[in-house]
Length: 247
Ligand SMILES: NC(=O)c1ccc[n+]([C@@H]2O[C@H](COP(=O)([O-])OP(=O)(O)OC[C@H]3O[C@@H](n4cnc5c(N)ncnc54)[C@H](OP(=O)(O)O)[C@@H]3O)[C@@H](O)[C@H]2O)c1
Image 1: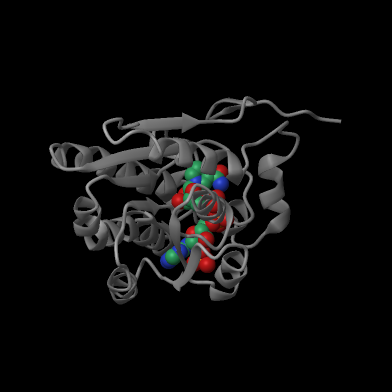
Image 2 (image 1 turned 90 degrees about the horizontal axis):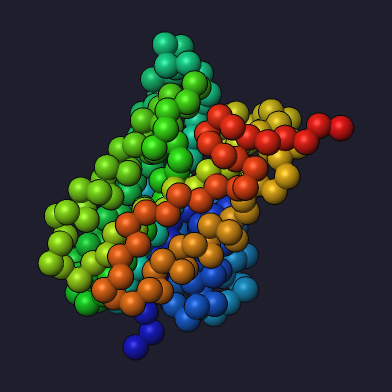
């Protein structure tokens, strides 16, 4: 019986690369996100990828995806991202709410809906896409740092609560990954400002680098739980310590 992996936020960046990679590893992949056209394009690459319109902030949408599954062996809670880079005292409350709703409550909705199937599979793996922002605060990190810390503690708590059950909980915490959407979304569509994030950095991580780590973690033997992987580019020694080459 082929295994099924559900990847949220599969229309772009890390989620898209992960869906593609897990399909190549032999999984039937359910690729969820809001932008249906992009999912259709991805699904056209492989008969193993099924596009599903999904908004993780909607319980109805999450329930519809769960109801469409025959089984679920892997859940990758990837949908999310950052909004804004204002100092805490000048932050937009609405942006904090949206970040919490997508990154944290979105992961919660998916986890609640698919946990019975993960247990039923006999070797379920839940992957939580956090960030180094889930481990270290930084100026302007604001609501994103808070949301990623929440996701990280959710993963830790789940691992404690699920001990004795056939489900592994893996946290993947990347540093700087150059993806299509992340910085553009953070800077509210300002592509020039988004490009500055990666300017002069020799080799930021790619979506494929992170997908590679996810695929490795989920394909370990059932008794091996990779608790957490922190992955940074060589040029990023710490959140604040990034090597940049200037002309
Ligand atoms: N890039 C980085 O430097 C970096 C570093 C560490 C961690 N991360 C984390 O990695 C994850 C993926 O980010 P990325 O860099 O690949 O960014 P991205 O290219 O902007 O992709 C974000 C994905 O999330 C989906 N998404 C957003 N809101 C959603 C919702 N309500 N329901 C369903 N899907 C939703 C988007 O799809 P639709 O818009 O089509 O719904 C898109 O597919 C995020 O959790 C991010 O916080 C990124």
